[in-house]
Each structure stands twice: as structure tokens, then as C-alpha cells.
Amino acid sequence: MAVETKVKKLRKHTAQGNFFAVVQYAFRIFAHQSAIVLGSAWAFVGAVIVILVWVLTGPTFHFSDTWQLVINTATTVVTFLMVFLI
Image 1 (cartoon, rainbow, N blue to C red):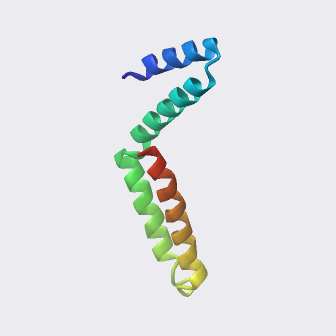
Image 2 (image 1 turned 45 degrees about the vertical axis):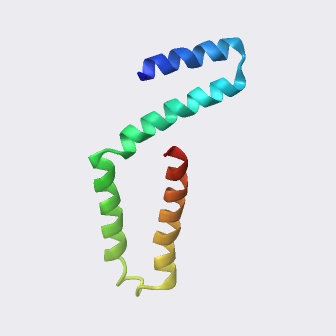
């Protein structure tokens, strides 16, 4: 379904005051747009760059527990949020 159609349905339910339908359609629009952006090659390149920066800063931080915790926490949060988008 095209985004324009979803937006029209969102406006229709907003006008009717159907709160749960508004939330549902708003989330669908958000999830669809997120999938387009996060499923792109540029998002993958960005993730690779983040990992490379993290690896290259390892010697600076002496490969400490905190250094590892930073990437562990970041990937856990991203994974948790992506599960709901899937």
C-alpha cells in the first residue's frame, strides 16, 4: 500500500476520533519509512563505519571492558528496537 494511501487512512481515522486506528496507521507509516531507510545500502555502510571506528579506537582505550560495553549496549538497543519493526 502506498504511503499516500496510508496517510489518507490516518487522516480519516483522526477525523473520526478513532485513537487506536490512528496509532496503528501512524506506526505502519513509521515502520515502512524506517524499513526503506534502514534497509538501504547507505545504512549498511554507516553500520560498517561505526564498527570500524569502534575497532580502531580499541588500542586507545586498551581494549577495556568499558570499550566493549559501549558496542555491546549499542547493538543490543538497536536489535531490540529492530525486532519491533520487523
